[in-house]
Image 1 (cartoon, rainbow, N blue to C red):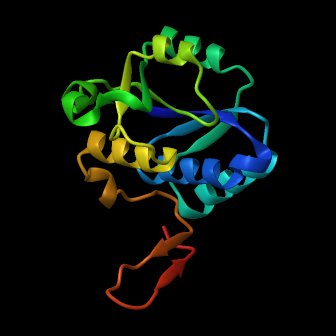
Image 2: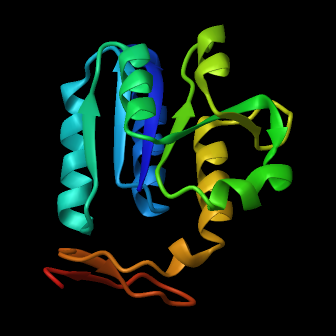
Length: 175
């Protein structure tokens, strides 16, 4: 069970980036995303619509206080993994992380506060260079699932892409 915690969503600045964090979370195998910061009903509607049309079990929810989310997941026995360019390189820790079955992945928004680094069980770097939260999240999930998520089938999909070398083929109302 993998849940993603997106910190400090800002309506005017982060709408597209947070949406992409949600889509990557879903497509790469997470079951849920929780976001903090400013509540965004448009974001929730978009993500729910994508999950409904493209299938699979995925949910989004808003929580006002990220510390409460971290405490809740810690109590439930989740391993908290914070993705940050300041962390230990993923290649040095991924085997250890794969042994964990309940993971809360934390991805930042605006500047991440120091307490997140302290509460996290592990601070992981997807390179130690500036990069996107979406890239870090995608690479982390890809490494965790060892590429198996790329062939994942989504139950109850109303839209399906038929892979082609050229052109586009979409099947609607499939299952």
